[in-house]
Image (cartoon, rainbow, N blue to C red; front, side):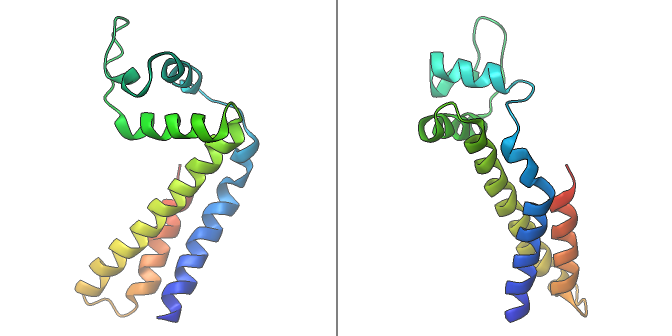
Amino acid sequence: MKTGYLHSAAVVLLCAAAFHACITAGFQSDDFHLVDRIDREGFFASWGGPDGDLFLRPGTILSLAADRTIWGGRTSGFHFTNLLLHMTASLLVYALSRRVFEGAGLRAPGTAACLAACLFAVLP
């Protein structure tokens, strides 16, 4: 079981090392539009509208709305939340791939799962 903790720590540290610089970056691409629209229209902002924006992204909008409430206009907070979410997704890739590799009878399923999660963690 200790190797599971080591593998998880490796995934989290690699993810942090790969993306720590994003914390100080500003908003990118459509972030300006989405955050402004959430400020004006609330949670249902991206569920359609007169400008033809018909994206149904409740998870994204919920995350941005929560970030706006918690962090205000500080972009570093938004990016920190995204980094935590990416770390969590990478750990879920580790857990899922470990089960798959164990079921396939791989000799070292934890190591293979760690490699899969690390690859997921660093690829944009």
